[in-house]
Image 1 (cartoon, one colour):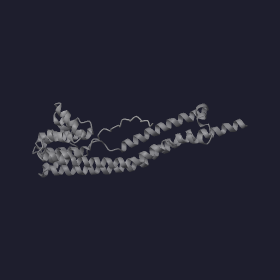
Image 2 (tube, helix red, strand yellow):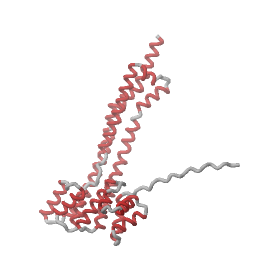
Image 3 (cartoon, rainbow, N blue to C red):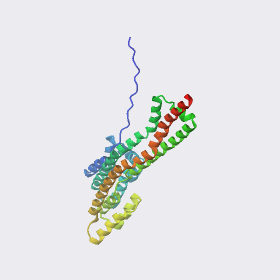
Image 4 (cartoon, rainbow, N blue to C red):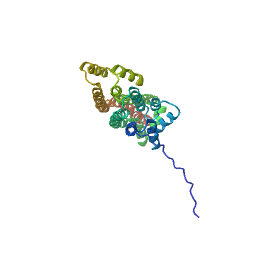
Amino acid sequence: MSTLLPLRPVRRSSPMAPPAADTVLKLAVLLQAGVTPDRAWEHLAETGDVAARTIRDRRLQGSPLPAAISGTGTGADAWREVGAAWEVATVAGAPLAPSLRGLAAALRDAQEAADEIRVALAEPTGTARLIGWLPLLGIGLGLLLGFDTIGTLTTHPVGIACLVGGGVLVLVARRWTTALARRARPPAGIPGLDGELLAIALSGGVSIERAIALVVAASGEPPAPATAGLLDLSRRAGVPAVELLRAAAALARHQARVEGRLRAAKLATRLLLPLGVCTLPAFLLLGVGPMFLSVLSSAAISL
């Protein structure tokens, strides 16, 4: 008689939130087709979009739409920027659908740049993490060769000094490597976001001073000096600032992508510093040193 094995419950993974750029682009299409903003968020929530569902729930709780967008928990940095753009567009009277299309393109460009940089950083950081285990492998190698590595490190006075020194060097190498990798990562946010927000405000027909005030109120930050210089150029030349701002924002994203690749390339060289200064000496102290002490102890006993 065959026995039935108890069935294990199948774990269902929580739905993944799509990138903010995809949700914003779908939202722009719905708004351009004439769907109201609240109804557009409901449509997106019904498709299983996690961020849209969160925004819809916050909206049903009475939260204003820009605040509901900014307070989304999935991809919080990106959604704060979407909320700021939404607030600027609605207050300035800018066309919402084209504004969101432009913002979606900026979000996608920034996300692609961040993904490229993350991939470029994966190889040097992974190699450094693997090499960081070298001192522990030295201890295991000594045990495989028949040396009492652990006993020497824990009982012999010189072995204890090697253990302490090697352990300190391993910790320093890990912290050093982590700090180098952290500096190589791109900063959060969209490069040139202030220019995108000002372009949205100016496309609503408001003055430059009013556009600056709206952007500061929505994002909490004044325009960058380079952006302020473009606005001054627009005033002096008597030309619309919208195209200047959007072109400068696209250039800022391109420069951020290039700088991120350069930082990733430099990281591979900089990671050699903790390797040579900390990891290799730790390997000598924890791996080679105990074996050498074991040989000396054995020779002294035989004599």
